[in-house]
Image: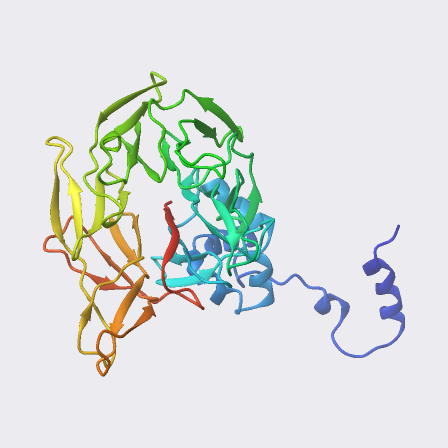
Length: 402
């Protein structure tokens, strides 16, 4: 079968139509004039993802190049993912957004595919592994109260965002559906443990591990003590399952899994914080753990790996709103590390109404602040605010680094 181009050419030549010649009409348009296309594509592939929206406005040729499989395959082959900070905020019509520290720009991700797109997703975990971003498990519930009440739907879904193709895809499901569970990456594999289901109210002991190279989950030995509402921390090649309950004697310990030995053991908790405080924890490149703890004020703490003690590095500055005299403490914020910087993202504040006794408004923040914890005293700076309608409490955040 002849192509439409081969059929059209003879009629165009015989018609006597004036204007550009056939050679001029169908001449190849270079991506960057004066450069071979393969070299030009490499130049574009090195540009950080935060600038892609601007690049696409330069020309249709650039837009097509950035959306081509050649472009995404080149970036994946070279490992040019760039650095990403992924954030999901509260709200009925929000989706994941990403921050590019190099460009100081936010941009939305494609909407996460879901069997319950209008329901609220919470209790999930999100991590980056093998230069991919994963959203794992969690619960779905209606945004608004319904009658009769519906139980949350606990899922074992695992979704992956590819930073090269900028697309979501579905991975192998966890063996056990769970929410509010511990999750962390150890030696390039994703470990999950504990959590809860709609039928298990006292916590799970079950654990499993995901191999991203083979897209497969495998069961692990169960934890000695079931855990719910827990978090995972990778430290010195082991998975630490940290409880956040206060006042429960059996919760003052942590479970530690050694992937080399394939065994669990219980240790005195290295985690002196609880949900009675607001907290979050992250680990930077040098395996140094940092926590942000709100117990009257938001403090940045780090752990001395030799002494095993947590010590204070400084505080997160209070929030100052326009036309409001008080300095305000944020809550519901996110905490993540990108490279050697710590980010405090979004959250809310109570804005006291000056004219009314005890009255206040809840203000959702799109504010993002960061510091380098290696430089003391801490020096806090602001990035560009989150984009679109993203603001308020942070449901999930994680970083991906090149």
